[in-house]
Amino acid sequence: MVRLKTAVANGPSGAARKSKNQRLSSAERSAYFARREAAKVLRSVLQGDARRRAVGSIKSLVYNPSVRNKKATFALVCQTLKHLPIIKDVLETANTLNSKWKRQLELVYIITYDILFGKEISLVGDAEKFLTLRKDAIQSALARLLVRRKAKCIEDLVALYQTPGRYKVFNRFNAEMHELSRSSCHCKFIADMWFTNFDADVSKPRYVRVNTLKVDVESAVLELRKQFMVQKDDMVPDLLVLPPGCDLHDHPLVKNGSVFLQGKASSMVAAALAPEPGWKVLDACSAPGNKTVHLAAFMKGKGKIIACELNKERVKRLEETIRLSGAASILPFFFFDLLDAMKLNYLHFAWLVDIEVLNGDFLKLDPKDPAYSEVRAILLDPSCSGSGTAADRLDHLLPSHTAVFLPDASSSADHCHAADMTDPERLKKLAAFQKKALEHALSFPAVERIVYSTCSIHQTENEDVVQSVLPLAISYGFQLATPFPQWHRRGLPVFEGSEHLLRTDVVEDKEGFFIALFVRKTMILAKGNLSVPKKNYVTPILFNRMFKLMSHCRLRSISLNTKNHSSDSLFHVTL
Image (cartoon, rainbow, N blue to C red; front, side, top):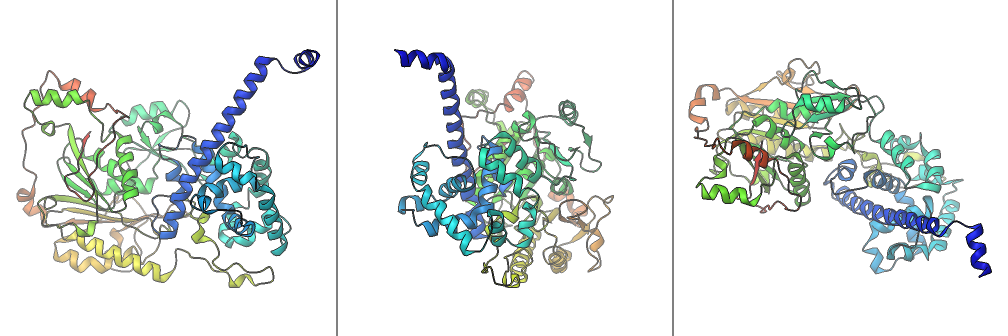
């Protein structure tokens, strides 16, 4: 009784203790799920980097709608990648992992980062318990590694494991991040610090593209101006410019798909193609889908888009983007019952267009197949080196950018080399694929406009590819047109006609893109034979407004069904 009374007198009240326990429990729960979300993202990043075929950049994977705690996940993934070579060496030296945990290495890496460099690990989760019990062995392995590499501190050790360019990016924040991570790896401050300083260049404006499938430009401007200074871009009609460093990731307009965080150069690609309403359009390498839904907005509710993507994982990203944009709004089941009762097909409505998501190889599509023989515009944004957006994508964090040979402390730094984006052999292979894809695009019989774009700065992937296909393009009746004539930065002067090409500069414009627009000049004479036959769209006046409202319903509980390798897989989109 005395002990109980003393506790009550000197300690917090029972309610306060209960509240504190609940808060701790909530914090532990948050950390538990943050680590697992980070492990999932890390797995995709590492697998894509190992195959040299990424599902998405680090940031695009973190910004996925399925990731709830974006800031904590972003910080954990970036910090773990930064220390990953050290973590791997430590785990190998400690030799503590059994076969079970070797199958969950990404989660092990995340937790090991927290044990060595981050916050104290609570005993929540089997992986946390397993590694915490071996904490002494892991920390001892790190100490031996410091001695072996003759490093005075952790940051010296990190420097030994990084290429010079990769380490330079972190140099500004290493001391602060190390101190902060010791006490509060998952706190809001450290997460905000990562988002603010690594999410964008301090001098780069924040561009957002208004998704006109959901909201008009003026309404988006009014809403964003409640918090930010907003200007309209002078070239892309639905693009807005905000001050550098604006964090919009949790803004309601972003979360509900009314605006997309999309750079200016990326937004220029679909605008250069400018498909007309009623056309059939082919997006040859469509994931993650930002350009696909931008094309849908240009088509204003009429026509069809075939979104082709070879990688199955990237198809999922494409579907999520379409769903978020409202381009594939899920309609209530009674809507279809009502149309059946009226003996009408819902494709007969002028305000509906369909997107066919095709999980397949663009190069294997037969241009003579009736499903593709009426394609009138093709957007070709193929795999490339990504050299124009490497810094923005945080590619310097990837293992492929780490020094391949790690020298001893006495070795010369000249012996280090990294797998980088200027490797001539890799660029040659990419260019060969790009040329083949562009030649295939030119072979579609009804195509009138083709945009070839890359996010590369290399002539090998840009001007050289265009020049190599020009004879074939001319034989098909194509000529190079000038997208955005007011844009001052054009192609490198390596062949006659390169002034029609468009470039953005990785330094001046903060991202390096390339755009080439092919237009079939013979289509002007033959347009009457190739135009899409007119259809009599039937829209009952009584239900017109109701149908339009229903078309924007998004039922989260219903998933989209996509048939792999089949042209029968349709997403019917509402514009």
